[in-house]
Image (cartoon, rainbow, N blue to C red; front, side, top):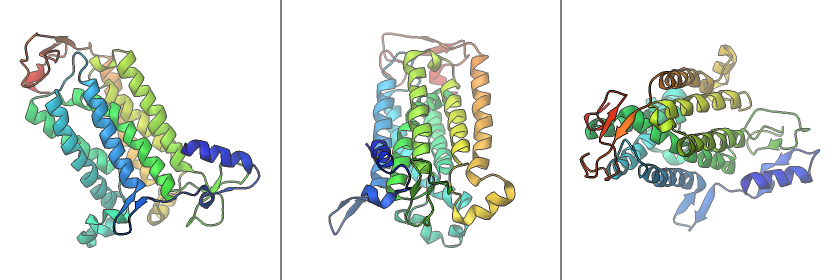
Length: 316
């Protein structure tokens, strides 16, 4: 509906830049006077819940590297990783001045979250759950990676609804060029929607098809590698259309790349490495048993992996 609204408005005013204010959007989803709920909060909630639901559906398929109880633990620890990592990552990469006033770090309602920080926090959460449960870290990452684009899509749509993180100035002859409040009178790229499409819809579709229509999940590291490389490539590309954070404009000008682009480069390299590594190794072969012998896994869950040289009960 959001994309359709923008397209319809663009069709009605082909020679004039769109006005974000004309779309009737508000950052607040529900205002009860004494309590407000913002779309950004709902975006996080929707991404986490949908990801948890889909992960639970994925692990019911043969050969899953984790059981439902592990998914429940991941739901809790990954949520902590997203929030804590996202906030601390923002302070580290984008707003170092927050470290001078640590009390401001808890003011999440003022905005300021970093995807790369959230990714680090989530990776630590996965590593902890995998270590504690004796699971294959890489294969759990594969399953988690398929679920991440849900949150990316909702999060970028929420950025657009908030009228924040707008794109660079462009010419008004682009039908979807838009004037954002706080962004000056010049039309800009709605780069939030570019990211929603590339990082959410396109990348999510690719990963879902790979999981459900191919045998990619039997190649440890392939799915998470495609996610890492695909996200990095999408983000690197969109950053050419996205306005750098105000406090980092000088850095972007001096270095030739934005902070977001610099942060995606190691992610792109790691993703490519994981893809090549997965494709050059034999896929895992999973042996099954009729009884639950994997400390809580379902009767169709994994018991032993061969070909990868590991036991699912023995860790990564």
